[in-house]
Image (cartoon, rainbow, N blue to C red; front, side, top):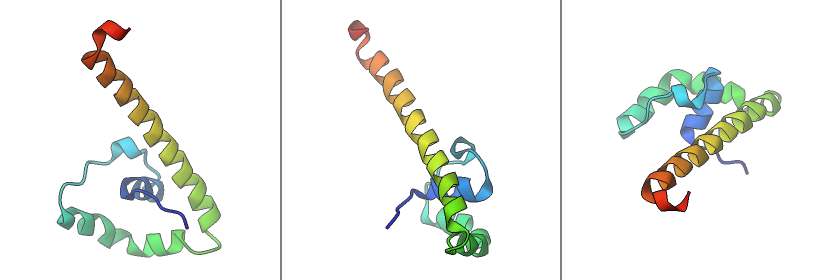
Length: 84
């Protein structure tokens, strides 16, 4: 079974970069995010459409991993400047 973070799914569904999405802070925002996309989500996860959608998900997950590494790098540079 595949699992994916909600921002990754929404970015892939909307053909946007995950960095373009605003952070979700409240459950009501999750509902607002999902409600208008329910039909598109159902279509994306159909057996016939899923392989192409999965490629989009994988690309967004890769982007998220790169951003996380960059953030970790910058944070560590600031926390431990003597370790450069």
